[in-house]
Picture 1 (cartoon, rainbow, N blue to C red):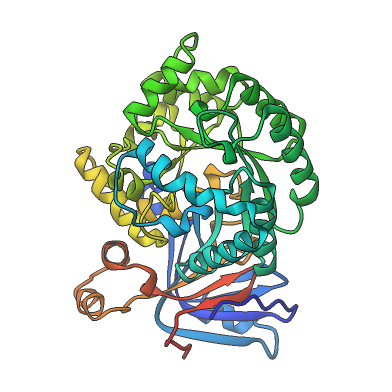
Picture 2 (picture 1 turned 120 degrees about the vertical axis):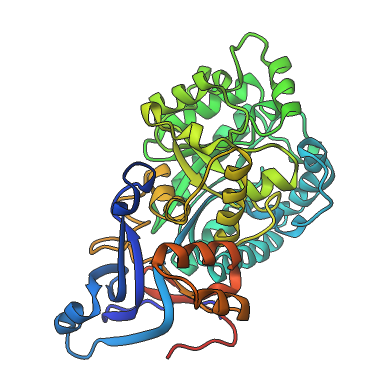
Length: 446
């Protein structure tokens, strides 16, 4: 079931709960707030009370409905910082590396989005799958067609979701049917901003696909469009694949490196987020830190396409920490589940000789992701005043998980089991703006 039901009467849910009040990469376990039995109260789309059930119960308004989720854990909804909703139909296509994958699968799939009916169907399916996986917010690439943006925002609006999205800008090195121009991309983007940005929970994102598919003129126009509309976002790709890096170097030989291409055109700064960043240099990390530019870490995609291993702990070096979020990168990524994404991020860290704790992984998927997207004042945490986007995880969603959980001695161990063995089946329910938006098939509340 996927639905959005909005009403002003307070509702409450009860289970164990976890949220973050700080960054576990810097302060460790003290960043976590855990309640073994909590109540979250929601009204008019926001959290109005949260804490130990023994305390909150006495403060509940008379007649407040309380739904109890036995054996579950409430978390802030997951945030997916880099997705391509038009690539839903090509997930799990045979894994050639990036540039071949774009030509063989991505571009043919995206050509179909000239049809508004097709775009609407895929957008709805994509967002419903995200909700069933516990993802309540995402930053999405649409296609070059304005219709694809209209479809995505309309679907997200009907579901009450907070999303970021934009029309892809691409005026070279792609099939003719997927090309715009510097002028048309700017004009269409400006019209889409007027139509959708800051409408309900929607934010527009200026979206050059990546430097190789935009001319200098288009990148310059993208920078102008972003500067002219404060509060909008910017997203693209960087340093995902070594072949891509060499291609960009040949296209922009006058620039000092890949990041410098974007920097030159004014495409770095707060609310700019770049997918991947696998092969960034120390000086590029430092520049991202200085400008407040964020990276979306996409581990399932990077391993599937053989792109490389993102150096998460290097990006987060305390002296010049970069804002980092987790992302599925559907459809190069292989799962909608942020739990599966955390699992893969753990393995990538291991292969880089570092360790990623469960607290750090859950932080990246919630408060950390919100911080990377400059939305941490609205989503990503459970606290009064925050928007009521929540996921309820079934801590015994499979027989194996149930057996393994019997041997957990604390919440840190339990979270690690969930991120290692869990997936979409672990999501009992998802709430968006205080409304029940998705519940797992075959499961019911207690």
